[in-house]
Length: 247
Image 1 (spheres, rainbow, N blue to C red):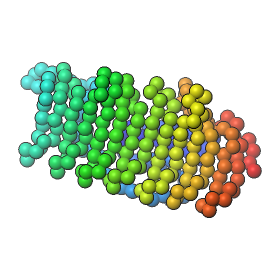
Image 2 (tube, rainbow, N blue to C red):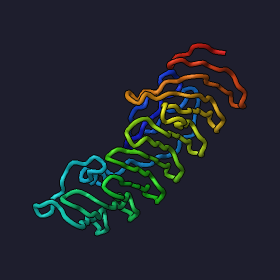
Image 3 (cartoon, helix red, strand yellow):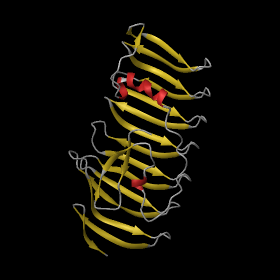
Image 4 (tube, helix red, strand yellow):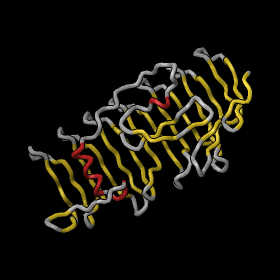
């Protein structure tokens, strides 16, 4: 998996950080156990290599054909003659392309919608969806990935100006939520955050504020905690990310 962000919960300061190739364990409550499913193998390195020719996803290399930048359709094959990659190049850079797993299953599909927007989708070798990434002005504005079963594992969405996240959701293999974040007031950077017990019962909920410059998110107001049966066990009052009172 690439470009994932993890929401570090359980404290006054909530940090958004990048993680790669691992489950979002930073989003899990440290004292509870969740049913985390199989996320599948990382994409094959030889298929990932094509990303370097895709400027929309950060690639800065130029592919050469017969000593000149590739133009038009180019197809690469596996040793058995099956299609590995088929892409349209403009000046050595990819515009649209598809990669394939060795078993013939589509591995990823990239398309430019226009000069600003593009989308890349990928699939596990068993044909189930793996991920979807949407780009705007070279920035990721939406990312979602799936377990090998096809069930949604993680979703994130952010504002197009590169600011605060507007949505973050992590799910266990059984489809039950683990944690969610939803922007409720874009102007003031206010968001509602919820954490869940294993099995989907609400564990805690409260509000937080995202600083548009630093992108740090701090808890504010009243946070309420519940046990597995849904009974309220306590409330914490936050001021600027620090617990001011507990009741």
